[in-house]
Amino acid sequence: MTEDELLSEYRARHGAILTPLASRLQAHIQDALTGIQRIDRVSARAKSPDRFLGKAMKRKDDHTLKYEHPFEQIQDLVGARVIVFYKQDVDVVSAAVDRYFRRIEGRDLVPDAVNQFGYVGRHFILAMPEDVIDDGAERGKTPEFFELQVKTLFQHAWSEAEHDLAYKPSEPLSTLQQRQIAFTAAQAWGADQIFEQLHAELGSASP
Amino acid sequence: MALEKIYSFLTYPKKNQPEEAIVSGTQIPLDDGKLSKMLTDIFNAAGTDCNVPVMFVSDGEKQENAVRTEILSLLQKPSVASATPLAKRLQAATGGTSGMGLLFVCIGKDGETQTRLVISRFPADEGIVAEKKSEKLTVSFVEQVFLKSAYSYKAATYLSDGKSNQLWKGHVVDKQINHGSKAVADYWIVDFLRSEFSTTAAQGTKRLAKAIKAALQATTDIAIKTQLTSAAQLAANIPKKSMTISEFCDSFHMSGAAKEAIIAKVDPPRLVHEKFRFDVSEFSRHLAYKQVELDTGAVMTAPAEKFDDCFKPERHNDKAVFVAAGHIVDEKLKSTK
Image (cartoon, rainbow over all chains, first blue to last red; front, side, top):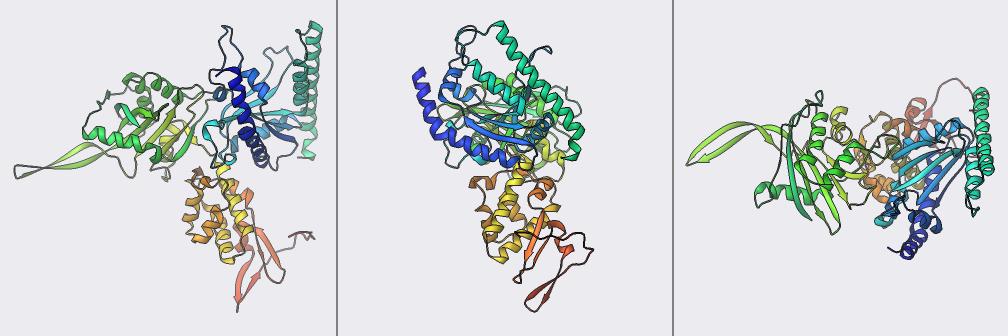
């Protein structure tokens, strides 16, 4: 497929399949997590055509395409997020995810070194639930998997701002700018630590 | 569909000796013989015979499952050697109850672009052979007869399109899926294939409970309501066995109308036939309370499994009388029922 053909095919799937699928998935996840305290929000979206193309055209060090079959290999064509108040709540939501979904991957994304600060979040690759796939769905074009991220409010806030800034510069960030971003990540990490501690100390009063 | 390659292995129960080597494996030539014909029939029918969706269980953080890896290697370069890890794995998962078996690994085309793999196990049995030779009948006992047993036949099928990130899902048939013994029930799917039903116990049970709840709200037929609430009450005693929503209805001998009322609330409808392991605690989360309303305006509510203990029903002419006895611990005024 050429770049134009890829984009055209994705646009068609985005409107006809992925967007309605994301909407049903969001409702499905909300239903699965009913009754769990301190969930700020649940959202699901279909990857935008531009972002898809950007990812699909990524190349490896040897300049060959990273994804030979992007529609199958890119597993976050539909992505969902659950944002919770405290770090303890990430574990509660994760346990519910394991009860209701089949996963092929689940891991905590943390910076490589202990003295670094940056993106933090729990990521799952889960099988698309049969409940959100209509009987008449075009199976060959319906993603088999979706990505679910579970994050605290601070992890979410930091990653959103960082993601926004990352798309702005036309040249690499300066050392100071990199330090500033790491500093904000450290602040978010610190806030989560304190809230985790406070919730553990005071939480028994409000489960 | 076209069957292209058949490999066969004799496997022994070696659950406690996982390192034990496979005794023998061979490639079976495809010819006009009866064995080829039987295996071709099994291969061609696998798409419909194997009707239970399963999914490989991930080994952890990474997207890996040892059986899936072995199957991908086998499909990449089919041979007795590349099929042997599956036979060894089956042997290591087989306990004394399941006994000796004959494993067939069949590979062939399914359509223009897909490759189908069918793995089937024929259990060993004892039998008697009677042969008539020149008017003389010879009867002899044979120990190693391998039967496509109606009670213990097992098979699994996977479709591959050659792309990476694929082959996480497959379909199985296992006649012992509901066996009382967990070891027998789990042998094929969990122990050998390192898989689970595509639908988790909680999700399948929630789907059932919500369909019953929605059916109760939708119907005005008291006979149907009674059947649905009775089934929900008795469900507290169901062990963690596998079932479909349709089988749940049948197990309580529901009327056609009651079953239809539940099925109508399953969305999408095909999930009526999806297998899951029943989870009592999940079921109770959704149908915890039974409520009965009388035409006088009286409303009685109690935990579903204890309702009949809390309210003793009696009949006075055509009217129902409920007697409840106990200490008052609370009183409420509510805006809704």
